[in-house]
Length: 287
Length: 312
Image 1 (cartoon, rainbow over the protein chains, first blue to last red):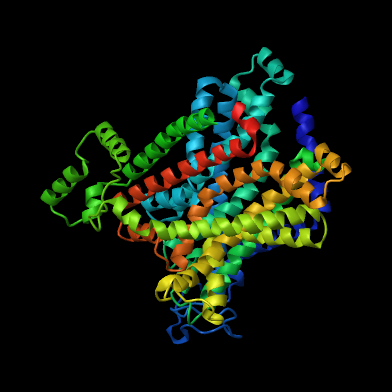
Image 2: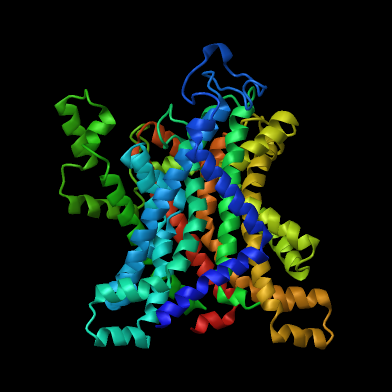
């Protein structure tokens, strides 16, 4: 029964955080706007993001091309709008995979305990020691550049923190009476882990997800900038900066606008994640 | 202290072994025949065979693994496929540039991060605190290459204060001018990280009873904050600096690419472009060792800052 009461108590805490922390609203509105732009990309983009207009190469921002055009005469604004899709899809899919796999590892490892737990945590420590970008870079380079491989590479870099977050409460919970009662009733370990332990940490895991999505967006942009992202001509923010960087001395708008798009998206996720984390951290809530 | 240090060193061994194993496995995951990836589809069978035996690819996997570990132990990190030179020689040539950059950034980050963090904690919920928190949030949101490009555009291209794309001439003065912007870029991000943890760590410590006692005894405010406050707040700060060292290395790779600086980052980019997996593998080993060394130093620093740690 404790499982139910703690799970229900969370939303009111969330609501409190949103009421108290005005910056979190900025994050929420910004993120909603970016998601909406990505969803409606074909409807709101003024031009085709891939179509080349050779007569209009490297046009500075103007009334016709609000954010200018690139070396192939493609409209920067349209590419930026469509690029939001790739960034969000990659980050969301990568975090979702990392969340599911990491939480599974954490719960099972914490529940089983013993040598198995020791070995799993040792493996995760090794993975945590690798810098996110370098591990992602190595996996992306080895698998080859594609949307799926990019998602896999970023997901692998983010599994360990989710496993950590899920393991600690599992160890605390498995000694509680209601788990013991479940075992006495003859519930199998899968049912206990899935129905009685998992719901108690889902809020923490989701909050971590919003913060790690910010990291995933940054990693995707960085890998695309290095040249390990989704292949051109598909517009991606990191890829646009990569192409724009070659013309940095003559056409500043090529690199600056996608840079701002990445910054705003990561900032929105961080603002939101911070507020959510404050909301579920009982130490901060009591203040 | 010596026993504590020795124990930390011993504990670093399994982590290093684990990291080396991950690197070994990852490089063997290259799809298809590694020799064909290197030589191209058109390579003839004899050349492929020769390369396979040269790389040891015709050996059983466990022999390759033991050879690999033995090589790392004896300082043989393999040879670059593109240049044919040992990886360590390639690294030795550019390492000073990367160390110079990361050390400068770390220095900037520690000085300004501690300063701003303490200021924000002491002036909690005042203007300085809000400004500092907004700065650190924005700083944490920048991918390193994005902030680098913006700095480059404003200070090098528009204002012309610093050389563009590393073209700054010779000598120590020019070297410093070349270092300034990249170090500032990495330093700002490091400052944001350190400021954030310093603020929260100081806030926790300043609420302790011994701080109130010190104040009640009439100890001067500055001394309460620095001696009684900051000294006790240092452990989480050191943890974060140690943890973000990996991020710092990743960011330095991006920064070196943006500012066209020689260093490990440019070496990685070259290895990626020429599909030089041997060089990539060697570089990852170098990074792994750097990280283990820093993690161990971080652990040792705990014992230095807080004598209680040694006896646990």
